[in-house]
Image 1 (cartoon, rainbow, N blue to C red):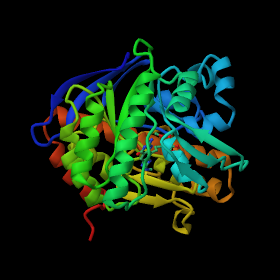
Image 2: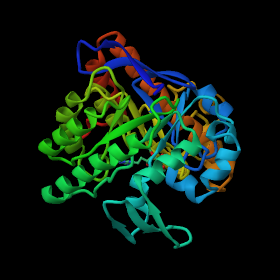
Image 3: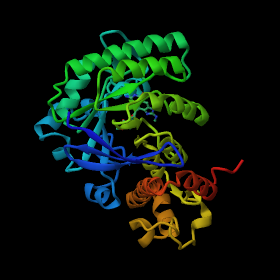
Image 4: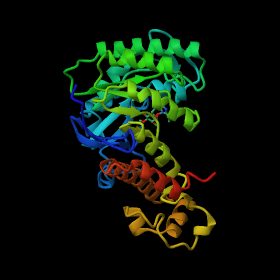
Length: 373
Ligand SMILES: CNc1nc2c(CC[C@H]3O[C@H](OC)[C@H](OC)[C@@H](OC)[C@@H]3OC)c3nc(N)[nH]c(=O)c3cc2[nH]1
């Protein structure tokens, strides 16, 4: 599998690591944030804008693209990169999570999951083999194994059975996957908040020698200290020479705390989702631009930001667009939020280089307001 990881250095002040992931569509430095492009588009952004803001890998979604437009159409287009005109790296999720989060009528069996299409209501079936077939058709550089992401909280008995099935599903994904294939396949470690089950899941998956590993089953409603505790005992179970991807995590504090615990890759819909209701991430915390107090405020969204939005547009103008439901307003907030997180990851990588990520965390948390009681 053509996904390799290069460990450049470890921060002397924390457990964070600076690295580089190589994929068939280019390489990117880690820790890295990956914008989410569920339906083969990072909502309201063009590939040129994504490239200009420094995005190097984006996500797309097996479940959604299977339903619409169908993986066959994407394959006929020459794969996702051609279909959406993005020549950077792409990662697709296996569809497991979406089945558990989007459709209520589902039945999990050893063979796979029966559920209803959340749009048409028709009965569907997804299995490890089917998830691999869809991802092969989509052609993403990094594919995810088909897993169950159990709800939070889940009792130990349920979680143990789920972890064991997810490990069997991971083996089936690998069986169907041709290792010489350019696409890489990551295993997903589950086990909830149970250290024994996280250990079992990590052992099962690392014995299968995937080119990279995701930590799943987090950012599903658990408190942040639970997530950090799970990371504290799970990340060390994963091989140093492979990338580690924490799924569904993207608030600024979690990106920093995940990096400190040795995570290399993150994804989250948060920046693009909140942008579409006019909420922006700034170095002084969140700013809700539709607020009346910005009606005559001609400063940029964030005076410490040098992004295209902040260099050319004011709070008053963006507030006017957002309140008028003008699409351009959401493009401006989306661009800024993605740029903010990509810039944060650049600052994290810089702090690792200079062995001061702990100090950076304190400064950032203070200014953003995370330390406020
Ligand atoms: C939010 N907390 C969150 N998201 C988890 C995702 C999905 C990530 C997925 O989350 C959206 O799908 C719904 C995104 O689309 C809207 C997908 O991007 C394409 C993204 O795929 C990586 C998980 N995926 C799998 N396969 N297994 C997991 O255990 C898991 C845990 C997550 N926690």
